[in-house]
Image (cartoon, rainbow, N blue to C red; front, side, top):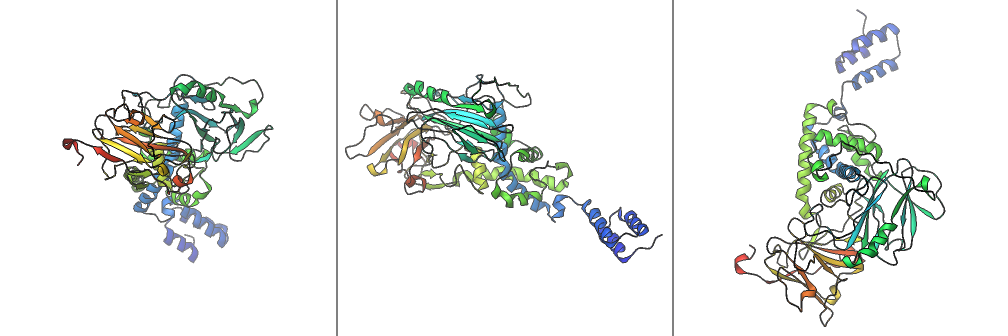
Amino acid sequence: MLSISPLERFCVTKYGCSATDKWVQECTVKRTSLATVLAMILACFSTMISPLHASAQTADEAYQIAMEAYVYCYPLVMMDVTRRQLTNIEAGKMVGRGPMNTFTHIGAFPKAEFREVVRPNFDTLYSSGWLDLTKEPMIVSVPDTGGRYYLLPMLDMWSDVFAVPGKRTSGTAAADYAVVAPGWKGTLPNGVQMIQSPTPYVWIIGRTQTDGPSDYEAVHKVQDGFRLTPLSQWSKTPVPLVFKADPTVDMKTPPLEQVNKMPAKAYFTYAAELMKLHAPHATDWSMLARMKHIGIEPGKSFAWDSLDPDVQDALTRASAAALKAMYAKIPTLARVVDGWQMNTDTMGVYGNYYLKRAIVAMIGLGANQPDDAIYPLNIGDADGRPLLGQNNYVLHFSKEQLPPVDAFWSLTMYDADGFQVANPINRFAIGDRDKLKFNPDGSLDLYIQHANPGPEKEANWLPAPATGTLGITLRLYAPRAAAIYGRWTPPAVQLVESSADVMPQ
């Protein structure tokens, strides 16, 4: 047997690599240099360890990192599952859905029986469009709205709002915006403004002010003016869109259910594939360094099968635990003042507040920046008790306490599940665009109850379900700084009348 040098013997005894004996013999026979032997030792050692072991991670540490990774990736996965379902249908086949690179419009407020989306608004009509910028920029054209309030929030695939053309920002004159993918270089037509997107896919969730059904016709003209045009087709005759449905897309199961029921292997594998196309934000370096310890890296596929079984188990348990933790955090996600949850901090643009970004993606995907709209959510009356349909309430605004907005505001009634309920006057929301009756001192009382309060008060009546917990949302469009930064909050809802046998406990 060939003699073994001290360095070679160290290789065998220290690392126990089964291939070392052969490599040691080859090194000895060929009398290679010390540097070569060291290189072989390192190569041998690297073949024996997984990404997790390389950082001396335990299953418990993998569990913690996986919880963080689940939360971090949640908006990306939710956005893409939503995109696939909403765009996997021919244009005109279903309201609110259509192929990529087309606008689809909702032309009327939801009816009482509508149940597809929780807490729909009765202030604006929606125009939705998903952009695919992988081949070329898309030009978003907006018409002159004649002073009418509108906004076109643009979301990247991490659910962050990165641009909002609209009355508050760019005005209401006609304009054209070229939305371009990261790294795009080229020349745009004269008069076309460039908007750089952080990701190659973009979701536009347009909203146009609508003052009731009598305003539909005028709003439809604005919606018809929203157009999407590939850069290569600008100033040319439009080329008909070729659409082919993907039969693998689940078109029936709601995206929320699809994502929340994904096994850990499928979830992290899906997220890794998405990150090949949609790069993380520049401020995410620390999170990416953490995820690398469990084998999740942008630009690479996730090799679940190469993980130690204990680590696989840790990732499975972590996914369920992370989802449970997200739901548990909802009630304390924002500050509560006088029974109103004021969710304004980091909304729409979340920075590194990954938990909030994930929770908003779960319960309200597509949230606006607070500069464009804030939605105080009522969770109790002046005494902290949930509002009940069998009680009568009044919301009193002093003249100085009316919602501070540059656009408009409304108060919307929902049931406990976030759905509107049929009522005799077909009124689901009330606000400053209605013919409200103000008190002589300029204050305002809104009556929240099931029974009609009478002719003198009906103008200010927001009908409630007969029983059950009420879900009331106040909406402020283009809120002023006082509301955005917490110097203004809604007044407490006051219990006016109740029956002793139905008093809340």
